[in-house]
Amino acid sequence: MIMLSRLKPAAFLACLIPFGQLLYNAYQGDLGVNPIETITRFTGSWALIILFVSLSITPLRRLTGWTDLIKFRRMLGLFAFFYALLHFSTFLVLDHFFDFDRIAKDILKRPYVTVGFTGFVLMIPLAVTSTAKMIRRLGKRWQQLHRLVYLVGIAGVIHFYWLVKSDIRRPVQYGAVLAVLLGYRLVKYLLPSGVPRLFQRGTSLKTTAE
Image 1 (cartoon, one colour):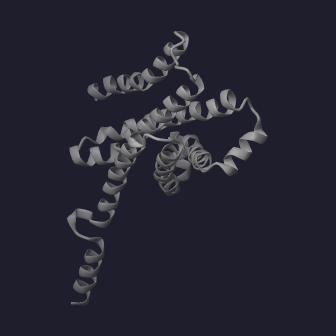
Image 2 (tube, helix red, strand yellow):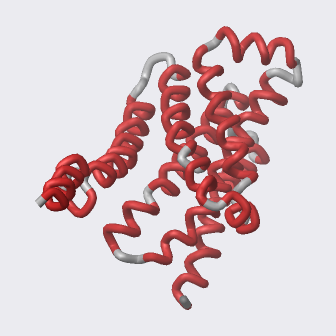
Image 3 (cartoon, rainbow, N blue to C red):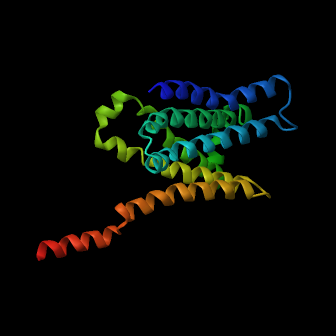
């Protein structure tokens, strides 16, 4: 418990470091030749990175047996939403200057904007229902709702991949990380306790018949 009380504030501060770096670079006028693009790429990348870290909590908890890791997940998820909100706000305010007609056209006509906007919208109910009160109120539905995070991750990677024009190495790397994280969950679903679920069910029926 002592270790957890020290690690949570450290993790909180670590999640704020990219934001602090962005503010410092802006203050120094060190955002490159296209500041809006720099901010957009920076905030979008960190939204995905922190989202992936939050998705790694479950496999790490199961592999290490450190159950307290679960207590970091909500904080990480909210920070992922925070950076996604900064990413969208940059698009809304700095790039489009609240020109909602132009924004709507981009969402409808540009696939990378469409999928990115979809991913952001899916994050909103996850952030809103992240409180302990909402978890109690929704019960089992809360877990079902928060499986949307998988779609958010997929949408984020596709958005990044379609956004880049030449060098696709980073979005491919992000896609590989997401594939591992989702693949682990798929294997865990299909192979509970190392036995294929289909075979396990069949064995159970056979035993009952005998």
